[in-house]
Amino acid sequence: MSANQMSAEMTAVFSRDLHHKYPVAVRGSGMCLYDQHDREYLDMCGGAAVSCLGHQHPAVIGALQKQISQMAYAHTAFFSNEPQEQLATQLVQAFGDEGARAYFACGGSEANETAMKFAWQYWRARKQPTKVKIISRTHSYHGNTFGALSASGHPARRSIMGDILLDWPRIDPCYAYRYRQAGETEEEYGARAAQLLEQMIEREGADTIAAFIVEPVAGASLGVVCAAKGYFAKIRAICDRHDILLIADEVMCGTGRTGTFFAHEQEGFRPDIVTLAKGLGGGYQPLAATIVNAKISNFFAKNAAGFAHGHTYAGHAAACAAGVAVMQTINQQNLLAAVRAKGAQFGSLLKTTLSAHPNIGDIRGRGLFWAIEFVQNKATKEAPDGGAAIAKQLKDTAMRHGLMCYPGGGDPGQGLNCHILLAPPYIIEQHHMDQAMIKLTATIAEVFGA
Ligand SMILES: Cc1ncc(COP(=O)(O)O)c(C=O)c1O
Image (cartoon, rainbow, N blue to C red; front, top):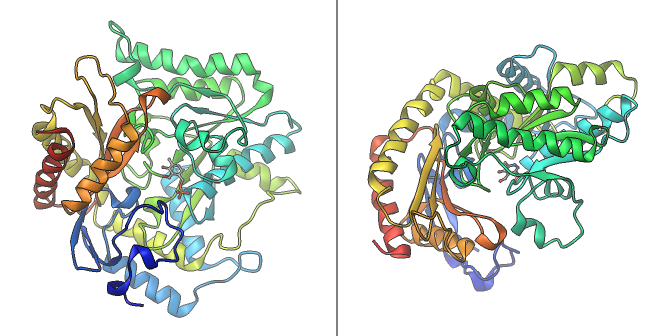
């Protein structure tokens, strides 16, 4: 059946929303995707912050074609492969800790599951088997598999699972727009927010806690929230003091999205474990990495039992070849500097174009990672009722205007905000930004009124 003949009624796909009629994407080019009617969509979110080099980038396509024509797959229980070796070396160099190692998987959830397994097996091998809990933050999202969702604090995504998930401790995020108190400096707020971790560890007992997992820049669940100054330095010190591993989930905010290869670089701390996905494969292949520091990696190397884990597609040669090409393109085309410069331009354009709107409470971001938070009342910051439905309406309306933006948040009853996320490819140019402003303004006017 051709794409033109397909209809939602005829589909055999168990799609994300069985009540929604999805257009069929048939081709991509640069900043745009095209559907079966050749309708153009300006991709201002890279899907979910995935397509960091845009669509059909010739360098990645070329590298993939070369690898697949030579050898697509060799099971990692039998062989290593060149792209996996090369990608691991590049990632460890970027991480800057000689002796660190990278473990490859297919997506962010798998990468975070792997990170947690590293933590559990590490403590077990160090004869501290009671250290099992993973502390996370409320409103966080670390993936949809059982462990990753158990470690997520996103109420809507958790509540559908009832009591099935493990209920590990969670602390409030560092979210100045909503939680910083009047009269409090940024540093004071950062210190107070970090102190929540220390209090939680003391309450639960450090001997029961394996790790703290956190996004250095909170992505889709909160809407690009950067921590207050000093927050992460304090978090790092607290984890060290209590012998707790620090996992940085950079599935969304990593791979250059915020203007440095790792988002944690700008926060001045180094995690014990960092996970990457989305942008690492750039949408060309399903790819994720869990990077463990030299301390953990050397420990497993010396321990006879090693690390017990594995997936059939771990370290897939074609996927890793895509990752190598993405990283090389970012380096060769100086795209980290481009993300910083274009991100600053994009942010100020968003603010000048939209911040006067009565239902826009906050426009925030870093690099090419931005969010617009919507409110019912600008002065009180009251979130709109039915925030999740409004965010979805914004996404659907934007699609009708030929624009892709990523909806987020949920209902105020669950303590969530209403926002859309913008994470355009690093190849964005001024004219794409101008076009995006026109489409965004029209979308917001249609949903909220001008
Ligand atoms: C921060 C973060 N971690 C983990 C995940 C899960 O990644 P995946 O959907 O590739 O399993 C996501 C996905 O949106 C994410 O944003």
